[in-house]
Amino acid sequence: MNFDDLKLSDPIVRSLKDQKYDKPTPIQAEVIPAILNNSDVMAAAQTGTGKTAAFVLPILHKLSDPKNAFKGHQLRALIITPTRELAAQVNENVNTYSKYLGTRSTAVYGGARIHNQQLKLRKGVDVLVATPGRLLDLYNQKSVNFKNIEILVLDEADQMLDMGFIHDIKKIVGLLPERRQNLMFTATFSNSFRALAKELSERAIEISVTTDGETGANIEHYVHPVDKSRKAELLIELIETEGWSQALVFTRTKHGADRLQKQLDKVGIKAQAIHGNKTQNNRMKALEAFKNNKTKILVATDVAARGIDIKKMSQVINFDVPTVAKDYIHRIGRTGRGGDEGKAITLVSSDEFRLLKDIEKLLNQTLPRVEVAGFEPIEVVPSGDKKKKKNFNPRAGFNHRTRSKNRKG
Ligand code: ADP
Ligand code: MG
Image (cartoon, rainbow, N blue to C red):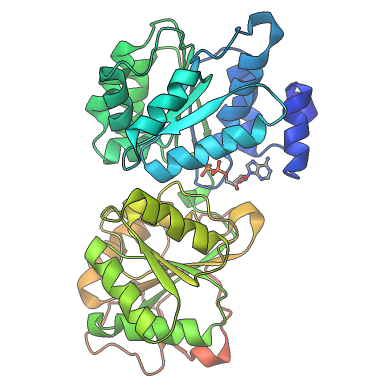
């Protein structure tokens, strides 16, 4: 299948050529025809599989179709995202794919001046990307009008539910015209996602493209057992010996992210942290600097990083084991994109063993324990299986491959 088979209009296909996309991803191949066919859709595919284009392309196609094009710019498609970064990123995607069309789009989110957003809305937009809270503020101030909305998208819906946006979402949905197309995207199909999707639309068709264990087969996972007090030291050792050009490091707390960033800075490793206590501008700048290779290490909390598209991350490091097993999948969704090889490395102290077990249960595989010479923990992390631990010298390079029990072929 290629993009021509999807019957998207020429200006859209041209923008895809500019992006050098040669064919639709599996989720795009399934979702795009369904949306063009006016179906309501609930779709799940792991992070990094191109879900944004899966809804943006057919939306642009429909809005620009001469048969039902509008004069001027009326708000006809509303895309709701959980975080500010994601809103900005999805809006960038809309702009990229509509560059040969007359469609106008903007993003509205908290942490940025509402006045500027009101000005843009007043000039008229066809597509609006919004976080729930700011959208409701703008609605209450009568700065946005929902009466022409034909298409509603909930992007990264599982995350919106995790972040407690359910009431805001229901409130927004209650303000929209009843006759509309509902499109819901998620990285993981949870029961709460299904319940929300069913509530929004009885007739939504379910499309799911997930790999076994829901993580890419090209990702190598392993665990370094280490005492809690020596995690930073071990991370620095790995950064210095493993030859990583860049790495994304996850911490559990905002405070932990800041502390680690300072520790890295102290030894001359350029690092920046993103989390909920940073201003919007600050977060955007840190992300930009990382994307442009100006910082080596980006330290992030789960909420700040989910859904964010960072290209070609060869390794993701879990400085702390995530407390919610599903977050492990979200975190490592940032590596091994587009068939590239990726590594997911988790630093585990003895108190985190139970959390690690939860993740292994979810992945249906035991992650190899790899002790680093000089960092063997005093407080032992159980091995999880009967196999003997391997000794690991970071300077010797590393080529251990994870075997997933349920990987096919
Ligand atoms: P998701 O929402 O599923 O996590 P994104 O929509 O953020 O994924 O897309 C991940 C990356 O894949 C983006 O950098 C995007 O530009 C790229 N991408 C999307 N569609 C294609 C395609 N058909 N071919 C190649 N790359 C693509
Ligand atoms: Mg996405």
